Every structure is written in structure tokens, then in C-alpha cells.
Image (cartoon, rainbow, N blue to C red):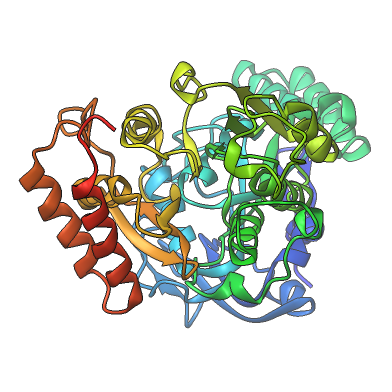
Length: 478
């Protein structure tokens, strides 16, 4: 069989089959070899889990291959089970657009394997635009909507040094100099053709395994079990809400932003999010960090006595120690913000999942909107408005989401209580109001509430109309 090893003068790079060994498990089904070039690894891939290969390149190396640019591929969305793009992105004019295309054509839950150089000399094919660190490659995939499974080093730094040494000797000339450079480069790359732990951050090339997240189906999370960690915990959330939060953190979260848990109470929402997040990070082999920001006053209220707390407790007392005990197994994932949420200006950067169970009055709703909405990631961020379909007294949520409806799409709900919205585009600064609900006239509020109710044709519409009536009967100062 023809060798797929690469040589640059005396510098030896292991065969492509060997390079793909650590990632072969992620390549399966109908595979797109994007930028296939002349090195044919079809027999190797087909011997594993790949059942069909489509080669795609600017120049067709063989019959049946598809010719075209990586930035605009002629394939329908979700056409392939997996995608391989090896040593290509450094040569395309627009790497961001190219990787978005790779993310588009792979099926949900499918993997995209991308290899790019880091410490590698210039080599035009036909041009050479860029290099990537491991972090840079991971960020490139995340911006395209992919989640990072892992990033692996490929080739040792000796390949880099040998390559530079050989080109230097070629340029300077001299038979003895070229011979010595040839021998040193050949022996070094043959004897130390690997990447040791000491040089992981300075590899010649990095190889990333990305995964396209599953589509957010309105019902896929309903089949999940209630997370065991919060199954017995007293909570104001219904089981479907716990299932939903767990699913979003485990399957939808990519790491581009953080998770805001606004209104955590005893920790039901916190545990559902944290356990899902831990499973997500373990699958992607990522280190844990405080990615969940939980907010609550942590004060006992009269209506909770006898149901969530003993009647011997007093309103106004703190239950923070109880919350801390409940979340203890996941404390490494959670940053707790105690007290009035309006005393915590947001400084945590982009937000990927925003769970709101704290907007119990329009003044708080306005604060949450002003602080968090500017940090949503267009096309990705999800808002869970926990009180959107709760009884008849949270019409300010309907007003708010309808006022900004040009920037959100309705995704799903839990029948009662929670409704999920996806941020579709950034809210311009001149559109976002400091006091959204408070700034609107009565007529404007009525119009927005009517529009919100009109989006439904069942009992949810009746609930929203009832909330409108209740809101209009409330004193302005309440």
C-alpha cells in the first residue's frame, strides 16, 4: 500500500493513518473528507467505522470527488455523519466561514475532526495564512457552534526544528552544511517522532475533535429521568423543569458563555444544571470551573413556612447554610451571589444559558433584562423564563419578551411554568431600555400582552390573558 507519510527533505512526519489513530473512533458513517488532497486514507477509515467517503477539494485528485471551496460547500445541512478536515484551514482565505460550513454539513451529534499547524514553517498551498494554538483552535470551533471534545498534539517540535534547519542549510548552501543538516533532521525526527508531556503546548500541529450539539427539540428532554441529585430535594420546580435544565446543561451547553441560575432557592435548579454540566465536561474531558452563577436572597419567607421550612423558623432568617449543604458535591462548579440581585451588576462575560426564576416584580424584571440581555450570544443563548406560564401574575415577563421579540424565538415550554427562548440576534444598545416595563405606556403594555397571548391557541393563551387582567388591576405603585 502506498505510504501516506510526509517528508520535507529529511524531515519525517508519520503516516496519516498514524496521525488519525487517536481520533478514528470519532469518524463514522458517511464521512466528508474536506480538503482531501492527494493522500488517500479511504482504506484505513473504511476498515474502522466509516461506511462511505465523499472527498471534497479545490482540485479533484480522483474520479467521483467533489470540487469546490471550503467556504461555500454544495451540501445540504446535516449531510454527513462525520467530517475530517486535515491541514486545510491554514490555507483558506476565511477560516471562520470554513469551519461554520463544516459545522453546518455535519449531523447533530456528529463529530468534526480538524488538524491545523501551530509551530510549523511557512508552506504555501497555494497560500499560507495562519497558525493556531490549542486554545485558538478550540475557540474557532466554539464560535462556529461546535462543542470541544478534546484537542490533541500531533507531531513533535523536532519536526519544526528539523524543517527550519533543513531550509536554512538549503538557503546557505555548502555541501557539508547541507549534509550535516540532513543527518541531524533525519535522525531527530525518526528517533523522536512524538510529542512528550513537556512540549504539549508547543506541538508542531494540533488536532481538535468537535461535536455538533443535538438540536433542541421541544420534547426530547421529556424522556429523561429526573436528575437523581435533586429528585428528593424540596423545590418549587416541577419534574419537567428539572429534566429540561439538566438536558440543557448536559447536551446544549458548549462553553462559549457561562450559566446564570437566577433564583436558585434551595438548589433544585442549581443541582440540575450542575449535574448536567459535570457530565458535559467529563464527556469533553474538560476541567471543572465555576461556570454556574447562582443568585438568591436566601431568606425564609412566610409562604414557605410549613412547606419548605419548619414553622419554628422565622421569616427573614437565612437558609444559605442549607443551600450550601445541598450543592456541596458540585461546589467547584458554582459561584454564589447572595442578597438582592439588584445589588449585583453583571461582570461575568457572555451568558449561554440564562435561567430566570427571580423576576417576581417588574422592577426586578427590568434589572435582570438590563444586566443580562446584553451578554447573550446570538444564535446560541437560551433564556428559561420560569414564571412565564405560572398562574396569572407575571405579565411583565410577557411584556418584556414580546417587546424584544425581534431578537428572540420561542423554543418550547414545560406546559406550565417555564418557557424557553433562543436569542437570535444581538439587541442594539439604542433598543435595550434601562426600565423596559416601567417605561411603557398602558396602551403599549396591553398591545404587547395581547400579542403574547395570540401566540397560543390553548390553555396557555387563557393563562396569559388572565395574567393581563391581573396586571391591569394592580395599583401602579405595587
